[in-house]
Image (cartoon, rainbow over the protein chains, first blue to last red):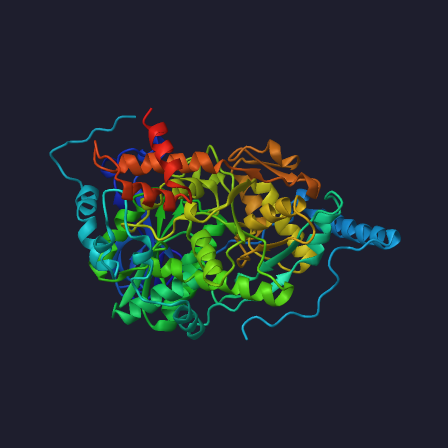
Length: 125
Length: 477
């Protein structure tokens, strides 16, 4: 197994076309109608092959699916991202607001809604 | 754009769709025909009880499946945040049912547990579901426990093979539970391929909209009524439900009623994605919410039977007392605030109802109780930071400001202050008229609604026969 070549039994992804543009449903928006309906599925390669070769895989449900080898040992790279500036101060500001509200209530001697309740019943009992 | 089509040649798509009825009849595990009463009416309650599961049965099945009994939490800090800007005497208590504590991370486990129970009970070797949402993870997780094969059909990528990180994460988690995920590019023909797979495998169609799936959510409504009564002495005055296909609203409301909470107001809430086309390849990645939005919420409420079953068990207009919409930026704000103020880091889509609840609670008396009835798991891909980075990369403007100025697909405006969170009220009267127009349009041409049809339409729109008669006359003008 390499980045470009798989052997039988390797975990891979294949890509295939389900519907060519002319076969697609009527009434689609133009941008969608102009494209084929494509699919990707992962499975164990039944034969070896290079990226782009037509091969067959056996999927988790046991189906045999033919398609062009599109990835070998396909993984996931999605992340948490980075903190957007528009979000970063929300916690700080909201905590300060709650603190100020409670301090004002105490200073005014006003009731802040319901008194704290004893612990409720544990869910799931 | 007119596409060339040779009328005498049947495409593969057309051939599969033509045998839809036959395929579905076997794959649904029940015969819907026996509930049909007319071209408009059907026996809804008969269909819902066709499986013969009582609420106790549902709870027993779900307990065995490791589902339900999630914590109900009072959000004292969020409540005080709202009270800090509410008028004196206003600012309801806000609670949340932490449904992310279910095994696969959302309330969808409740639906999936019932579908999988039926599949195992009827001897199916596997299940197939079409979903880009948390339902896929739930079905995959439950199928793994039951030892059943599972195929999830998922609309994942645009034509450039770029996937919204939230959906990509949902592919990952389904595969983590041993499901086969068929990832597809954008298009409603996902349903056609699901039919092909149902025919080839003989598996059960674990539709989101089956009576057993939707009845699985009734346990959530019942828990809310019972746990709020134990905690506050009464059922909640308001329950806010993130609304997409209608199952969440329907199941929760039915469960509340079954548990005796008949005066609780049901407030459905969706993210406003108006203007974006759900079948458009270019719009696909210009939205930061893959569910809980108006792109599903409005069409499914106004025509539930567009679903992948002959009759949809999820019929939101029967149950919603109000329908609120919020913007994407407002939900992202609330997601961050919930994390920082309450120690609850949860997924953005499930916080749609939370954003609506903060707006609602602000205008209610301080002794009112508002329950947000779900949360969902978050993590890489689903996280709001990840979503906002992706939106920016797709050319969507992200800025701080007044969220009322946001335009779905073009801009996401994060509130600068919590008082800028203001849900918009939808006109339910207009949605009821739209539903009735759709019901009439789906009946054969020239069909005259009978008095029984009028009664059905009144029930299906939470209205009265007199109002329905008026609406029928109105739609025919």
